[in-house]
Image (cartoon, rainbow over all chains, first blue to last red; front, side):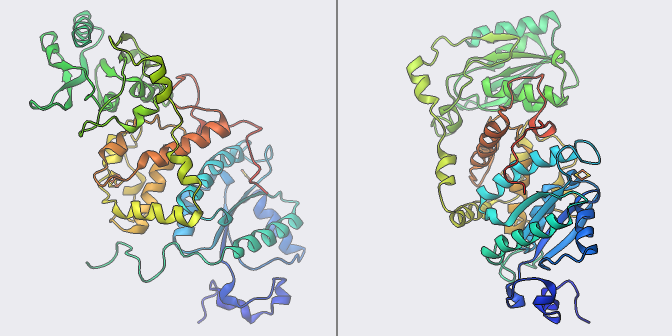
Length: 170
Length: 283
Ligand code: SF4
Ligand code: FES
């Protein structure tokens, strides 16, 4: 059976249908998107419900609040070979838990600087505020993010095969 | 200074203000020093103070079950402030014996890097202050206070080169966790690197695991690290950990106008926020 999570699946639907730019499936960037359930996830849902088209590069992971998104989640994605990560929450002042996203904002303001500093291309990490009513904005964000992530090419930080992942037998 | 230090320590013990003093003693006849714990007044003669007193003794404060006095340089005193901010110790449980420090030397007799840019030769917080008889002269101090540009140098390099630089460094890591053990602010009873369900960080020395460990170590100290530089000093393979710490210190200063270890009343920046925090990077 085919692994539905793999990029190879994409060429079963025409790119036009998907609303994405043409390109060979192998070049498609894989992007993880962590969305808070109250705003951004609902916004993405609305985009889907209203049949907005956007690139299929995104893999959505729903979290209770953007403040739940530990920087380690982002690190883990990059470590495991994803090409980009998007973190999205409610607009400031609109977090379901009042101030969660203010903390998210500070956390990632700092964490992204650390990523850049240790040599991760800044094009790989993104953040957005998308409300439950902003289906259109969500589609736009994904389009932009996918384009930027693709512009820096695939993630080659820890190439598969020649890394010592600590699970070896030596 | 040593005489004065011993006298003050004796007074503190005699008055019952403290039950123990954490200080430095000579290490087996060599020039270097080791931490010592003094509980009896007549033992204060073991105490020494000179340019070889490098340890940050505030590391032991959290574990002291009794009222303690601690010999603290300017950088060490900042760690006390951070510990108070984070409710790890109570201000009235500790007597800070501040020492005016000019600059300390490493094992090979070279001035420690952190001392070259030190801004706190006199501790910002203390109960007793021991002044130096030969304080660093003003001009010299100004010269020393010149910005640490190790961070800027690396920032100026292209991103791929930074990656190579740090991978080369992290490759050396043997995961001894000396950097964590020596850090007065790394006090979690269970460290994320030891969690196994799920396992966030590969525990064995490997490029992946080492990178994750170093990223996490640095980030968990963001806005808290007081740059006592102990992690870098103890790292057996010579990873420039201060270069990571200083970067985050710099970013936090620019973005949130916050400097760690100065004000015990302030909230650490990553537990706090302002409505108008920078967000130009958010779509
Ligand atoms: S002290 Fe150095 S070698 Fe040991 S865990 Fe820390 S960074 Fe790695
Ligand atoms: S619930 Fe959306 S950011 Fe907190």
